[in-house]
Every structure is written in structure tokens, then in C-alpha cells.
Length: 223
Image (cartoon, rainbow, N blue to C red; front, side, top):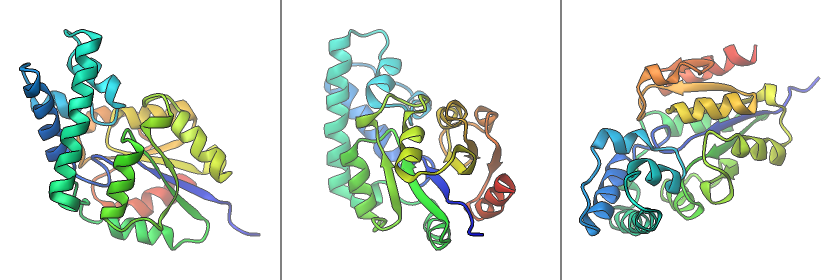
């Protein structure tokens, strides 16, 4: 009997890549452009993972919808410029990320995907910059879904791949990722090297501290 298909979905910012420098720089530029006080670094990192309009609504809750929309556009422009200037260095892979992806990809019954608050343009550029094009069979982005923690990204990834919920795992660094997995009825792996404190990951099926712990964590979930 052949092994069932498994689906492993990765969050991106704070999980696969450390993009906090670009995120903070772009958010700072966006608020500076409108002569508004820049949110503290901790506040900025706390909203990573949410779709940009939802994230900005939290950071700029005292400002009007029109100001929030201008901040969103300013952020997009600044982030794009930062990426063009620095290339892959603007969002370096975390130690062990590439090896973990390659190892899982080599397992015939394992399919890999992405579920991220990034835009399609941003995700495609990052995947190209790190030469990861061949690994991910499903890519779910903010352009086409409600913001995390709505389960739409996971539900769509499962629909595209035909993998059961029991054989799907979401890997991420934020409470939004864990809550999304719970809403979709799938297991989750929280990672401690990202942007939310470990205490925020209490909804995870399990928590890991380094990428080399991932294979055994997945084995435990699936057995």
C-alpha cells in the first residue's frame, strides 16, 4: 500500500526568511512620508503575517481609512524599492531552511506549499531570489484570500493538492498561523525564531527551536 500524500505548508516572513529589516524599514518610510509617528519596532513585528490592510489598520487605528490606504501604498513602494536594492539579502533564509525544504521535497509523498500574508508579487520575487521555484506546488498569498487567521489559504491549498486535513501541517512563527491551522482543522508546528514570543504559539500541535527538529516533529504528528 502506498503512503498517503502529505502537505506541508510554510509561512514565509519570520519562518523561512528573516525579513524584519525590510519590513521595519518600509513601515518607517511609509509613516515618515506622511509625517506620522512611526510605530515601535515591537508593534510592527507583532502584525507580521496579517494581510497588509489589516496590519495597517491595527498599527494606524487612530487614523482615517484614507490615511491607512496611503500608508499601505507607501509601504508597498518602500518595500519594493528595498527589495530591488538589496535582492535576496533583504530577506535572507534562516539557517537550515533550504536544507529542510530540500529534504522534505525529496520525500515522494510529501508536497510543499506556502501560505503567506505576502502579495503574489512579493512572494514570487522572494522565491526567485532564493532559487526555490521548483519546491512549492501550491502558493497561497494575501491577494486572493481573507487575512490570516481565516482558514481560506489552507483550505485552498488542500483543495489544489487533494490532501486530507489529517495529513496537512502548517508551519509558522505567529499566533495567526496557529489560529489559522486550528480553524482549518490541521496540525501546526510553531517555530521560535520568528516574530512572536513562544507564549503566543500555545495553540501549536508542537513547537521547534531549530529547523533540524522539523523532521522528527512531523513524524510525531503523522504517527
